[in-house]
Image (cartoon, rainbow, N blue to C red):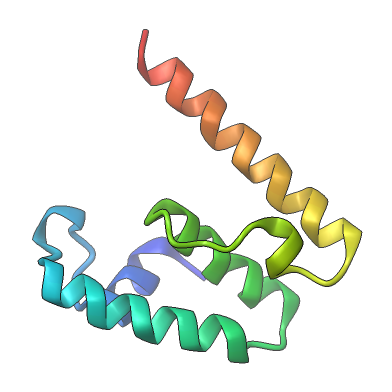
Length: 89
């Protein structure tokens, strides 16, 4: 799943700056529903990462059934934090 396609699917644009509060609310609802309904682990992880970007993701412990999935999510969180620290330089 590509980020641009996910953004367009849920928010009608692939431009973060063009997402209005109303569009965000509707997209968040669709994204949350699809995440809860998704059975494929890879697709589910992709949806979770998008939710993480928008700060609406549940914790890895809540979101994923297996320890491997939770570990991957925690590693993603750590990598995102590291990237954020690098951006501050």
